[in-house]
Image 1 (cartoon, one colour):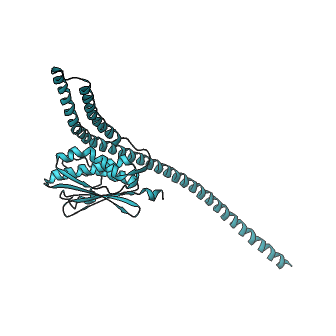
Image 2 (image 1 turned 90 degrees about the vertical axis):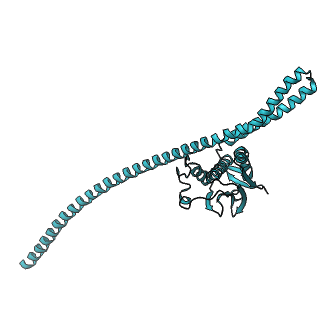
Length: 303
């Protein structure tokens, strides 16, 4: 019996020792677990702080980039506005000369007693024709720089015509012939006034290339074509082309091949067209360069 009780006591003792060791290890594990949990929470807080800081920095950079793009866009518009003011001066020259001649004729008519109702009616009619022409020029100028807040359907050919009309004095002054045949009304979806500004940038770059490369027979072909869901306008000139090493950098901000260039015109061209969910491509041809603008068709947006 003594051996039996001794065995029981021994077993109980072993169990007690095992329980004590297990309890000690459990306590250590609990402490380690609590410490790990504290470390996890600390890491989580640091991670959340880092994420918050990163989001803040990303938002700051996005805001800076938007401000930079806005500033570049304004600079591009101001540069183009200088061109347009010069064009307005040319477009006003003829009606101002006509008004000057009419006024001089009035003085002579008074001297020779030719003033009557018929003369006054003729004078008023001819004067109003010239004044309306000048007024239409200003109206077109204001329309050209009126911002579009929302995308809408617009005629690509009309936007091109607006830019050509405004820039025609400079084209004539530099003996640049433009071939643009409108065969049908092509409707795109985007910002019509901004599209006209893009066309103006392209025309200005072509003109500068003609002058810089001293090309004699100067021509620009403008063609509209459909490609899947896009309307593509090709501007093809014979101005000598673009240096191959400049092609990959052509649409980068501040990159320019001109002596007094700003390097923002083609960058803003790319930004404006991409904002219409379109794309811009450029390549050299045998005699010059081909720049293509692709924007979504209206029927693709509203089938």
